Amino acid sequence: PRVLLLNGPNLNLLGSRDPRQYGTLTLEGVEERFRVLGAELGAEVECAQSNHEGVLVEHIHRARRLDGVVFNPGAFAHYSIALRDAVEAVDTPCVEVHISNVYAREAFRHTSVTAPVAQGYIAGCGPTGYELGLRAVLARVAERRA
Ligand code: DQA
Figure 1: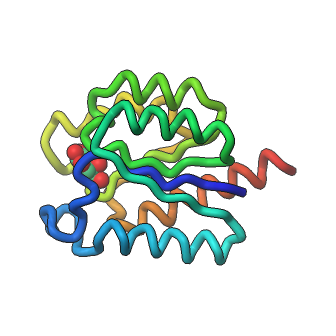
Figure 2: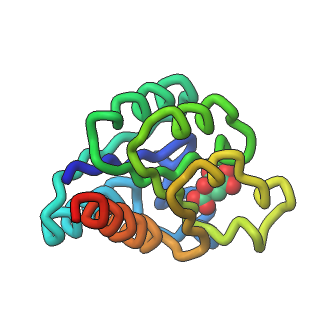
């Protein structure tokens, strides 16, 4: 199976950005851990990050050719109808991940417009959430193939 790890705005700053919320692992570190687990679980992994909504939309469209997406939309989760529509428009299962526990934070982070069209949702598990997301996406792929 082929899985895309997609990170949205400001996640390129992981490692230095608000370490109390997001930890000290860099985006490179996150992607490396994701690749290692992917190899262990027999998945082919691609990683991408963008600060631009339209570029993220295009990555989701491209994921039609893949088996799953693990997606941290960053702040776009809270208000991007375009990203929600993109996730809804493709058949590829998408697990939404937030590193921080958004429900323990400001009220504007409690809404996700993308979560209702995602396969699943993980928040507050730190960078480990990406690995949980990969396992969840692969479990769905295995179910679909069974
Ligand atoms: C985030 C949570 C969002 O509210 C925030 O805007 C981010 C990161 C997270 O991973 O916890 O950029 O998606």
